[in-house]
Each structure stands twice: as structure tokens, then as C-alpha cells.
Length: 86
Image (cartoon, rainbow, N blue to C red):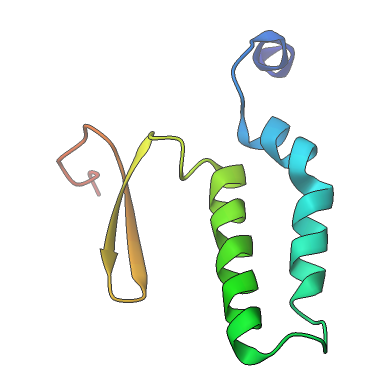
């Protein structure tokens, strides 16, 4: 079974990262609704939660090339320059 093979490898996956950090992510996201935060603190907390979510999903592992265009982030696989075939 491929899943057992992946689980047996000592390489972090999206699933293992999420399993390890699910509680932290839930706490970070719930904190965004706290009435104790002013707008600046809420924006900072949202940015931290966003960065953590990107790490958990694997977008900060170096596997992807990230290009920022204002508020938009473009993700592509590192080393692949051509577009996908349609």
C-alpha cells in the first residue's frame, strides 16, 4: 500500500505536518476572533497564522517558487519553467 510506504519514510508530508500542528493552527485561528485584539494586533496575528498555514501545507519547504505581486502570491514548482500541457 502506497500510503504505508509514505508513512514509513522519514520525510515530512502535508499530512504529518498538519497532524503535528493542528492544535497550534486552531489556537492561532481562534485567536483572530478575540475581542481583546486591536486592528494592528489582529492583522499581525492573521499574518502569523497565514505563514504557519503555508508552512504546514508545504509552500515554505523550498519545493515551490513563490512570486509576490502585491497581495497575490504565485506558486510554481521549482525547476519547471514550462506551462502545463492542456
